[in-house]
Image (cartoon, rainbow, N blue to C red):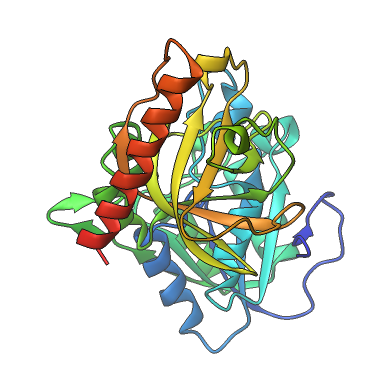
Length: 308
């Protein structure tokens, strides 16, 4: 996959054509974001999404920022699925943090992106000290000839769909509601690497996906699916520190049911989480761990039998 064009400099060549634009973090690309994107693509103009890396909260308070719902790569893949013409990722640095709301409009929206239609969420704020709001956008829109459309909050059962709410559902183990708000199962993507082959020794070979320094909003044992170019399988999935073997790093491991032993090393796969089975536990020995894994596999199979 090719990553999107990055606006690395303020003096980069501007867009050659007028565009319909939306702006946001789009963490998780949930159903509220999807409604906004659907409004955007209904225009007859080329469409553009402007997002940020790192996310503003990660820049201002890196130690307090919550785990992301999606990596940059996962977010770009999801955005591309809506037929967006161009995706811009603006580096969020000190210069951007200090850029006034007025300059953000004129330098980025007008001069660089040639915005003619701007679709934003109902609570959108921007610019230094978050001074920019819908009223300011509409005022500058009349001055610079672009239309501003406010997208209302997306509600499910009288609750506003948000990345924060989805993150809370995941952390609480409520994957059903998280999936409903996302519009799909919560999914983690990554490349399969060689592990220590402990699962194979225990009779349950696993596909290992390193999380590196990525923080995720879930931890425990899950029933889910692993999707690859070779096929899709039910999977018993572990996300955690592997306390029985004194693990030090967060690891994602997926044991594929009824898959034989496919060679997935080096492949990029998607791991969907459908149901939380239990929290991670530390066992007294490997035999007890093996028994627990066998129960997890059986419970995974039972879950999908009941939820085909």
